[in-house]
Amino acid sequence: MPINLGTINNYYNINLRPSEVADFIKKEINKEIKKSNIDLNNINNLEEKAISLIGRPLYEAFIKGYTRKQWEQDPKQLPADIITRLPVRTNYNANYFNDPHQGLPKDGYFKLFENILNHKNIDIKLGIDFFDINHLVPPYCTVIYTGSIDQYFDFKFGKLEWRTIRFEEETLDIKDYQGTSVLNYADLDIPYTRIHEFKHLHPEREYYNKEQTVIYREYSKTYQEGDEPYYPINTLANNNLHQKYLEEAKKQSTLIVGGRLGLYSYWDLDKAIQNSLLTFAETLLNR
Ligand SMILES: Cc1cc2nc3c(=O)[nH]c(=O)nc-3n(C[C@H](O)[C@H](O)[C@H](O)COP(=O)(O)OP(=O)(O)OC[C@H]3O[C@@H](n4cnc5c(N)ncnc54)[C@H](O)[C@@H]3O)c2cc1C
Image 1 (cartoon, rainbow, N blue to C red):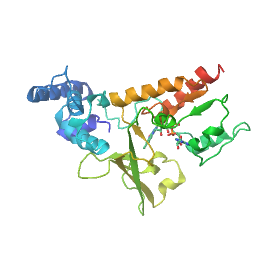
Image 2 (cartoon, rainbow, N blue to C red):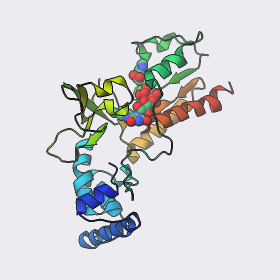
Image 3 (spheres, rainbow, N blue to C red):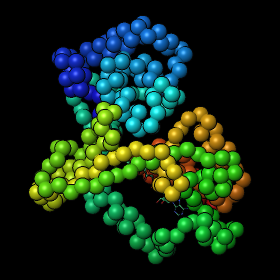
Image 4 (cartoon, rainbow, N blue to C red):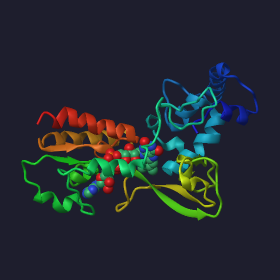
């Protein structure tokens, strides 16, 4: 994933060139739209939306089962607005991200944050729930809150919905289990959605050549109290509810809500970091 020229050529057993992909996909989409009477101006659910973007065969092979596992719901029951696009690459690039510059901090994120936090003005207390100490914060003090916003307001307008995941770790006595850092499992009869083999993120490190590897199977599940919220379920109803909480937050001049939990956004790290830098520039610098 994402679907690229290799996926398409292998799956259909053809040999398209990059310039032929767009027309090929268009024909696949049109075939299905005629067959199942999908009205492009009135898309009713995620399945219809996906088919209107990539056609039925690719949808059924790579998206349907995965989506079913990811959301624990039939894609026909899911709102279309969960997806806006399903990227199809017209080349053999198998990287997950499209960004022109990609990488990891030289010594990893742990070291990066350790260095940032190593400052005389920064004092860190771990293992403390914010709500246990909130009453100790003086009213004039600025609070930057990056937890889930509904909890901050004691769920007074209702609860935001989340998905979460469970990881199953296994250490194997082989050098290389899957040959890459992440593999998606789109079939419904396999209960997990992905397997991670983290050593592939750092082929330059010494442990890469060790005769052992660690894999994590990733299972998607509904968020329940006590779980860590991971992915917002950005349906219209949830987004409206979140907006209501944001309006409430604006009434407190010393409160800054941020982060993927506070802003109920599916962000990668670059977006999360960008957002905190912008928030700092726009809000805190002016105080
Ligand atoms: C499974 C998974 C895979 C991902 N893969 C990638 C990837 O490959 N590349 C990429 O760029 N991004 C990835 N991301 C996204 C990335 O992790 C997030 O964008 C980033 O962590 C967001 O940072 P944040 O500070 O906004 O939120 P978080 O990292 O979630 O930080 C919020 C913190 O607030 C704490 N908190 C919440 N409530 C309270 C409370 N009441 N009291 C005290 N503390 C509290 C939480 O414990 C948490 O530590 C992934 C995310 C997930 C879930």
